[in-house]
Length: 296
Image (cartoon, rainbow, N blue to C red; front, side, top):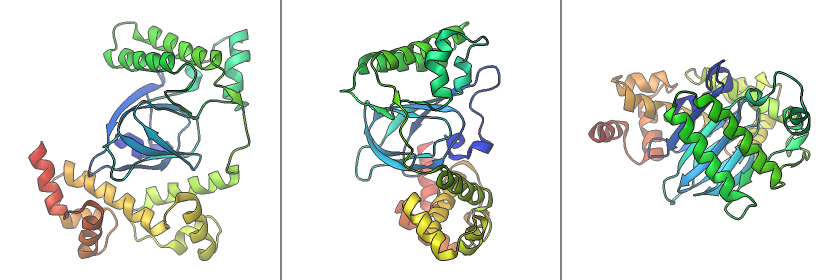
């Protein structure tokens, strides 16, 4: 799951030969949200259990078991657990749409895929149980996951044919629409990406709001309003959440001391780190680490 927590620049979904991969994920006490990020690949997520909030293009969508979520390339998106609800479990496929691009120009490419590549057509953001063609879409997506996970010799041929079939179902049920104007401008989207890239690359340092505001040529006051409006929390809250999520991973997967981890993720005061950690997870870092080791 850690790959999903990185920004696009640090993430590789599949490889050059087969630009496709899957993730099978489950929220827990130590992992309750996937921070806002983006990548050039298409992303399709099947919610297998529980409830959550999937933000796409900064629009929140309440998702639940059975929902199928589509994230077009380069759109900002994030996922978080819905408070006081069943833990969310989901599977995601991430792939480059170019793998469906023909080496030769043909009618299929021009009529169906070029409008998607060029963002002229709008794929559905979410397909629910009452959507047209839902059963066929669900079955095909399950077959795609099974095909990729088993990797039987020649699976690449079946994988590609299933992806084509998925788009056939989407088109035949008239789920593809002409593109509407994005709810956020490209300028706003690019600014958010710049801010998040800077935070994710520098969270270990002593970051200040003033420093980040200067990066996007905002006054500190305007920056704080901009960030809260589009991200849904203050900049400091976001930085601390990102640091705490990173710390929880280090506590679970390394033998570094709590003091070293607190400094590693950008906290200069271990007492303050302990206080924020307990506020977020309801237990101390030491108790958290002990509980994770008992579960292994």
